[in-house]
Image (tube, rainbow, N blue to C red; front, top):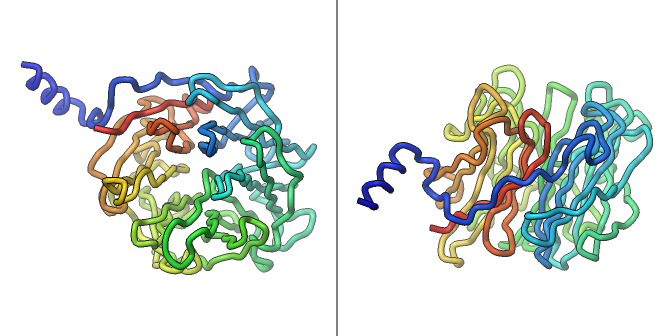
Length: 366
């Protein structure tokens, strides 16, 4: 009888295929007004070597390009409770955007973000005060304190034609295999507005200096925009990007690099990964030598609205996504994944039409 009930439940709700007892309830991490800002958006989440969760966001005075600060909260208990808001950087009336974080092999935490005066619609090419700038900061004490910002604009933005740039948003990665093992890869997209392209910036000296890879060939179905990266088991890298602009089919765009993010195959749509035009998150959870190759992907999985957040799992290097779980049925927009110290998957996501940025932990082991 018990087996019959389980099979019936799976038939009625396939999203429960890897839901497990002990999954955490949803915790609101950033709450506008309560946390000192009229709006808070654009989540980024990592797990440090000490097991601490670091959640970043833009603390906004208004829209995308208002007087935005880069803010942080920390959790020492797997996301059950969170610290007060910490301002990592603010720049007066200038806008700070797109916090992107990566934990380096040394344990150092690298933060990257953009600074602008005019916003992506009006930004100018080049490197003047009306152009976009990119900065890095570091923490060597588990995110408690941060270095002064370092301007890396000329190393991560092309001098001609390009107006706005965006790191991620989401996370960067450190390559674990092949000829470029140890390379830091940061996913980027570049303007002009309405004519976006994606690429990777990379560092082979622990973030001290940066170079830019090439942009992949377009597929004629809109443009690739906000982008994330994942390393595959053969050492190649897959990009997974938002599809935007005239002609897009509202499917995620993917491409492959065989040289550590320098060049890419032609972009193509992933027919399984539908989207309403929104940022998404992809994460390497485990390698084949860990027992099974598992890659996770999360986004609002429909083509009509930013709602219905779904977590998907692939065991064949992102070729197919046969397993899925509904994370949150209502408003679900930008998100970020991390693997917790206890093996659960943490999801930081914009909830209920940006009313909060919230966290939930999911146990995916069967």
